[in-house]
Length: 145
Image (cartoon, rainbow, N blue to C red):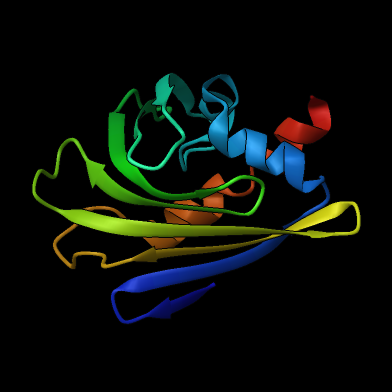
């Protein structure tokens, strides 16, 4: 993980094929099972319209029952390869950042490059820690599924 100015960059490899990792990002039923930084948290709802100009909204709950809702608009959708989208927190109106997600097959594994850009210094979220915790979950989800 690298912190660059007002952005973070994480590169990781999952032992699952790119199709499974793509589905984990684009299927509302699956994203609710792994999204959120609290390992004991849970997804409450997910609406994903995965197309250019489509809207997403995901609500999840931490183990302390704190709820978080994020939303955004998909800017670029290249199936099995790339997603870019805006990012907003419901509780931080007017504060918008941007996510670039790239997936590449590496044999039976998937290399994911993730960048979250234009992060506000006024945000209450620790994005680096949050995304690292979040990305520890999809692997176990797709291996179990």
